[in-house]
Image 1 (cartoon, helix red, strand yellow):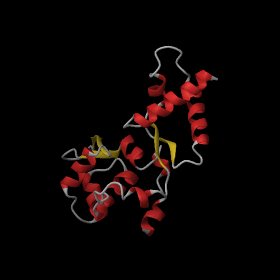
Image 2 (cartoon, rainbow, N blue to C red; image 1 turned 90 degrees about the vertical axis):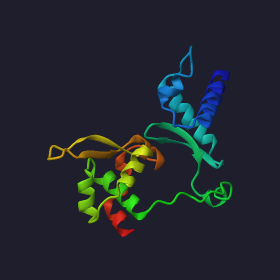
Image 3 (cartoon, helix red, strand yellow; image 1 turned 30 degrees about the vertical axis):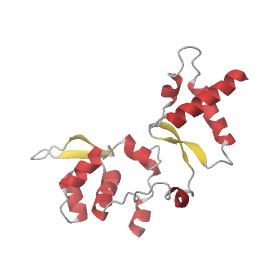
Image 4 (tube, helix red, strand yellow; image 1 turned 180 degrees about the horizontal axis):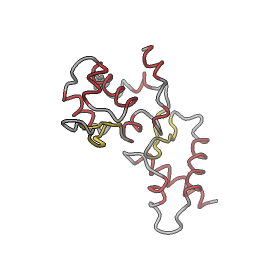
Length: 175
């Protein structure tokens, strides 16, 4: 039992200390000897979450692994801790991101065609800098424009494990 308790404490502390989500392999690699299996790690994560039921935080799975985060519903109080204004994105930024997420891979020209206006190059640069979008190739047309697609960091930021978790397009149009 002591080994299981130690394993729980090691996994919990690793997830708390990490700035990035940890994959099952990342967690297993913490051990030089007596490496736990991925199934053992997954079970410990499930057990930890059961013990966190009455806590304000939980372990969630995102595209690149697992992380500890505050449960939904505490933002009203937490916003008072960080005096900086919350990040607000322009309508053009969000529209561009939504088009890339739903239509990928997509070119800048495709985005402009859908939006009906030119895309500010800074928006694409920012999306790439945030590592939410990357160039995945070039379209076989004159000028060979870049094809853009979302990344695992995009999924992580929005608490998703895959693009199938995006809301249906009808919900987006309603907003």
